[in-house]
Amino acid sequence: MRKKNSLFSKFYIAICFAFFYLPILVTMVFSFNSSKSLSKFTGFSLRWYKALLENSEIMSAVYVSVTIAILATIASTVLGTMTAIGLSKSRKIIKDMVLSMNDIPILNPDIVTAIGWMLLFSSLGFQKGYMTMLLAHIAFCTPYVITSVYPKVRSLDPNLANAAMDLGATPYQALTKVILPMIRPGIFAGALLAFTMSFDDFVISYFVSGNGVKNISIVVYNMTKRINPTINALSTIVIVVIVVILLLANLLPRLGGGDNKKNNQNMKKLVAGVAVFALVLSLVTCVANKSNNKEARVLRVYNAGEYIDPDLLTEFQDEYNCTVIYETFESNEMMYTKLQAGDAYDILIPSDYMIERLIREDYLQPIDWDRLTNAEGLNPDVMNKEYDPGNVYSVPYFWGNVGILYDTTVVDPADLSEGWNLLMDTKYAGNLYMYDSERDSFMIALKALGYSMNTHDENEIQAAYEWLIQQRDTMKPVYAGDDVIDNMISGNKALAVVYSGDGAYIMSENEDLGFLMPEEGTNLWYDAMVMTRDCENTELAYEFMDFMLRDDVAYRNTQYVGYSSPVVAAYEQAQEEDYEGIEAYVPRVGYEKDEIFRYQDTDIKKLFAELWTKVKAQ
Image (cartoon, rainbow, N blue to C red; front, top):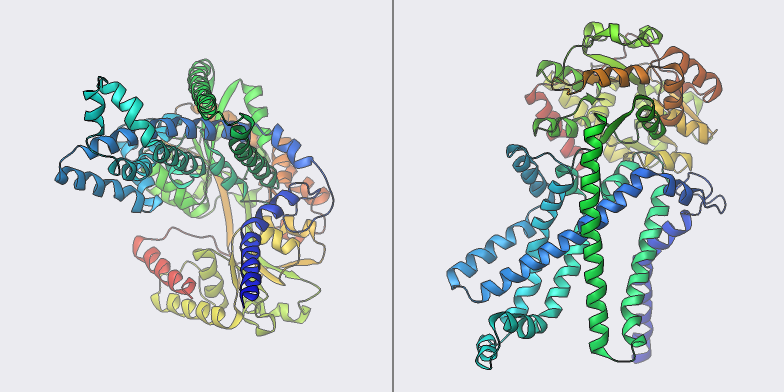
């Protein structure tokens, strides 16, 4: 019986280890993959490590993450330890009140804390960047240090410090020679927790950073918008560094010959050296950045993640002797939230319906088309749309539509005539990716039922909701985001709802796929460059927009991103050379049933959001 229990215990432990460490192993293996696939290993290569070292954005993010984590750890450890010691000598009412307040940031959802700090910095007029991120990290790390240190302080004899001073010690000596050594385990635990929380943070950092300052979490999040195996290379390096640190921490005491005092002194010197180095490096970099910003013209651009060839930014900076502070957003709504919070940008690249909203709310300034010398190369099909008649405020950037990507080896060609109702054909149940988007999903349902995707009729919206519920229950779709790209390249499912640009890229990697634009109509979308009302450097902003409209630049951008260019020469070149025979790259134009998303008022937007929540709550 004991032997059976022993075997079961070993098996259970093995399963646990596999569950924890197998994802890490897979990440490390695929960091050496020769292709872009994140799920199919095609051969050994170091190309992604080379790409990582050549990526200045990632190198800058590593610096920000490490220095912020070290400085936040030092500051929060000092503040948390002082607070914990002070609480031990405080009256009960004050102690209980402070401890209760200390629990609030720990129990609060990160998003609430992040929004709170963003609004605070905005209301105080702070320019978001390195310092705002550092202050926010110190603030949310300190409660964890207090929680770790305070139990150790409570376990001490309250008369210990008095006894030390009775024996001739000064208050400072009593603190440093008696109290701190006895609570050292709690301090170290708090410091390690603070470092981990700071280094790993994404949500708070995303909302309180600005002016091009990004940590590793923000950069990695932006990289997940498209297939980018550089993530695997970065993750592998981080894993290796952590393993090396853990090995040194465990081996150094043994190599010291058992001399604990000497080992402790060496560790103290090492920690102090790292802290001083990080502090000096931070100060030098901040001073250098300030001096550079004074000398160079600065342009602040806010775009969607993975939506530009980064080499073009470097080329523009060199050609026009300027600095581009380039930031990315997750969605149009996220961009709008940061604008409302007071974040300042010169150029935004939002979608059609959001441009309409920004025009209505007076966030934008009109475009002087005479200053855009390359505008004559724009495709007339992308101009003068409902969201901005006459293109008074917007310069086209990319365009496309939404369709169904299907596996030609699985899907019967006769079934394509079903249009959007192909996504309700039980023959393909469990073999479908739906795009995890409220507006796009309701667009599909409304179009399948013969309604306008911009309807405000609550009965039609309710019918679309019931269509989506029925689809959810009968088809068992997987609601996916950008991860659908790699999954469809690998042929994991037969059907997927995708944007045409993603469809073009996927089809270029998997020749067994086709792209269907249903006859019931679909969403024809446009993203465009707009200039904010508070743009600080309009001359540089016009130079940037004109640069992006240049034939060669537009071609390289569409080649990198995969979406249809509004510049005729670039569009035709990509269609002939990069996406020949791939129908997804060529959006359907002039079809009366295709529509552009329009601005939604608050009540309708709230109704859609509530119904979509019910669809996803399965």
